[in-house]
Amino acid sequence: MSTPRTGELPLHRLEVPLPHLLPFAIGSFDSIGPLSRANFPHRHAFYEIVHVTGGTGAHVLDLVHRPLEPPHLCVITPGQVHHWEAADGLTGRVMLFNEDFLLSHPDDATALDQLADRPWLRLRDRQDGIADLLAEMEREYRALREGYAGVLRAYLHILIVRALRNCEPGRERGPAAAGRAVELAAAFTRLIAAQGGAESSVASCAKELGVSAGHLHALVKAATGQTPGRLIRRRQTLEAKRLLARTDLTVRQVARDTGFADPAYFCRFFRRETGLSPGDYRAAFDRGSGPTGGGIHHDPRIPSIAAAATGTVG
Image (cartoon, rainbow, N blue to C red; front, side, top):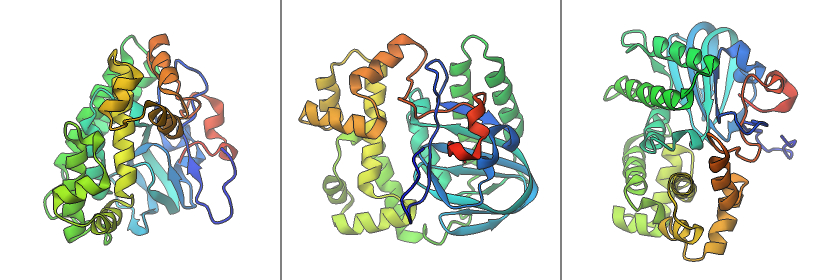
């Protein structure tokens, strides 16, 4: 990872240098490495789910300070800023994956955004077997038996559903994600996740929701930490990945179905968002079990993941 400019938050990426490895990792805080408990503010280019079963200190997510009272489950989405504060003796599991891992269950991206809106779920009274499920996921991941990628994706979907069950109505939310902002952000997320939503623009969504584009921008940013434009681009990228990987549509057709009239512009957009051309992304699926991701994935079995200097996880 390149050194950030002065005043720029570090951006940690998953980097998998071998093409057959998944854009996914799971393990303990120790096996994932010291950046899994980094004490400096930073962002991710991937999702992180943290299940804390023991330890002291606090976790700070988007400026909200939460003391540890294990067991907790926390979902951190791409772009959110977080760090650990005075953390000691952390036990539990850390799961890392990017949007490619959600292709078989695209609605899970919306569900993860909902969970990120209600972070640090306390599981003391209702664990729904989450600890056992995570343990089974790690066993499946380490064993590498035939079909393990599909099993892990299914387990992740079950985990997300069970975590949502813990989001009881009225549960405390962060101060920046309250009231009208949360309601509008949820409606916006549903709108762009619907069939054809990847073709939406901020202006068209604002009109559909009955607000100005400026008002939509302010409230969605307050509730999610991301702009409506960025969320639409994420949805377009995910939809394009799914169409390239799972259909025989031409690049021109994929561009059209994700809201791009100009295929050349779509190709530039896709390369900027993923590091790969649409053709290279599709070829990566044709060669094996998943995309290489152009060097943006990582796996804890690669020694460099535990080296603080690499800046790959956390």
